Image (cartoon, rainbow, N blue to C red; front, side, top):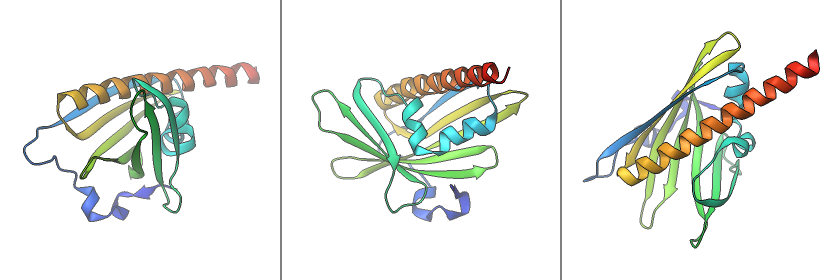
Length: 172
């Protein structure tokens, strides 16, 4: 089960940029030939995020539920020549057709928080997924997340559409 919006702690529901830095948003959309419930499930279950989440320049990525915290997950990844990194997230259902991640990554002296909102627009046997990642700092971070989310949603589309074809062929 995912959190509902009213279950979010007040200190994390209001994501703000760090003082002195400009906040930017990343926006990515993709149309997927699959039922919206399947897509929603792939977005909400950490074990399925491994299949579609892609990050440029990393050697390995693992997404798993965070022990002892319902609807929380962690993404552990390795970048060549650097120590392992972790992003912590909490999955929240903000509307019937929308899911959000509270996204946190540890910095040297603080925690950077941002918010990823994904809205599904339903259609017959297809839907469109619109993602906005709020609260990023700096052009470099925005560019990196823009590439990451575009590649990840393209991979999600490919997985969902390939899986739909396999299901259709096996039922005929």
